[in-house]
Image (cartoon, rainbow, N blue to C red):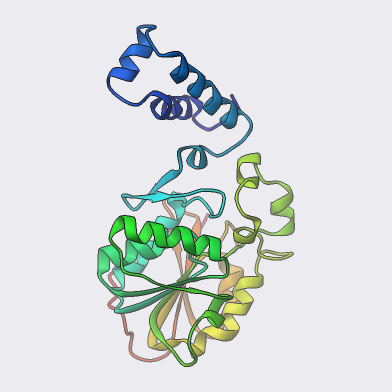
Length: 271
């Protein structure tokens, strides 16, 4: 079995996939499993041992309590990103935009839980195909547009909330990736030499897309929060820390009366 933070959990999840729950599990424990079930399980274990992420093998991941389809076309949703979605929900948006939407996990959860008008964009048509499946499976209403960041949108369209979890790994980060993460699309991971290319592009274009008093929420990598805040000067910025005290989301507020109701509380300091 490949090194894993929880190899036992992975093995049991693959066992459930191979033989199903209930009688199948009892049969295996009692030595009565069918030969094809045992072979299926062995094949799944080999895939995991070769470094394929558990979520790709199972074809699913959970985010904000919802089930999402995932495969090699999209980044696997992380628990860290739930903070981005929670902050968006706290602002009660009416008309929201997610850039770099990938599997659509954030957009689907935000639309389902807030009822807002939701637009999601991605440069990858493959990713948008997955997002469309996830929207249908979870009963979410999304407008999906293909294109590079804001270029996917009609001219002049504005939003009261924009959120994005862009590629933010540096060249050095990419060279040190765990082998499981190397299976995920590099398009969704690599953010340029220092990891900040997408934030620079967003800084240039977001003022023309954000309503007066609206807010921009950006997920950032470990240690990037202050640099990203500096890129967005002189706009008002705020760093939101995750449960480990790591600066995980940078909030940028446009001038004017705040368009979204803010129910966010004080944050922990970044470690």
